[in-house]
Amino acid sequence: LSIVESIRPRREDVQHVSGQGEVLFFRNEYLPLYRLYEWLGHEPQVTDPAEGIVLVVEDTAGRRALLADELLGQQQVVIKNLEDNFTKLPGISGATILAEGNVALILDLLGLYDHRQRCTGVAG
Image (cartoon, rainbow, N blue to C red; front, side):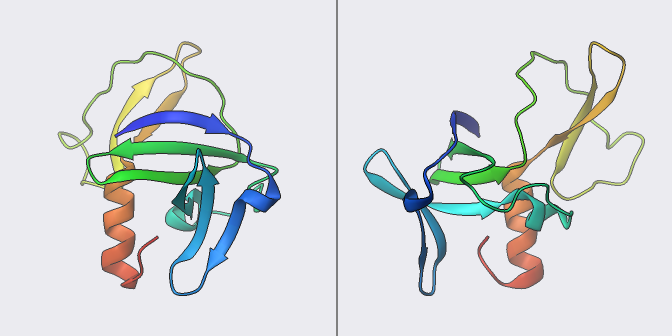
């Protein structure tokens, strides 16, 4: 999974499609739009995609759009697997220690997506 681009979409680029949920019109194609806070069961700072940041991600299954509260930055990090010391958590692939000493969990977006589908029977 890779991040293709981070954008702040216009309100008119986000639409609701009956039976499919929200989509984002991005570079002449419609991408399914998912809200990260719903996947994590977390209270959002931002619910309007035009006020947050949307990450366009791509994997072998294609492109998707993912709404996040904000993008703090980009860093190269060494990811440590957590399974040696902790029970496997759906959607968490590892952890890293940031330059300032804070621990950051590394999200497994495909794992979160699959876990949400299994738990709710709903895609996204």
